[in-house]
Length: 219
Image (cartoon, rainbow, N blue to C red):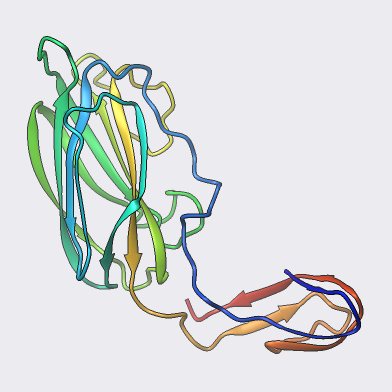
């Protein structure tokens, strides 16, 4: 939105996009933190790396989006996922996990190619390497990566879906950030909601008020 406090013109500038401030992401949590855990996550990007060992933490959901790795459209990266247990006696279950990335930064994990990897039901503790390929059409900016682990032993119908809430008895969800390199794809079009429906970066002859502008790039 652009706000004019007096008659004049307004110009918009594109400074970047990112998922960190998006508030539309669904919740994801199991019922209990007693068994299935995500013990370690590593993804080496082009210049920065996610490396997060949480083997001593018994949780249901953690927001680790301050940790990020930079990736490039069309490239592939190895994601290392370790699953374990938080049972005080060391009892471990057969667990599974899925990985999702919001490549188009629209606040969900529902779009094509946003389910990016799976850990099939395996006895924990276990270590897995998943190849993550960044789509050529991924929007440059901060994309959210979500890893959902769930017990499969006692609930074989569990699917570790991105938005499962209390579906699984035991599990863990962790969110991270992947920074997709690149810039806004040109050409860029503009559409103001002023009476003239102006289509340039700068709208002129505006009366005082608030205006909405729709900006669309070639993606």
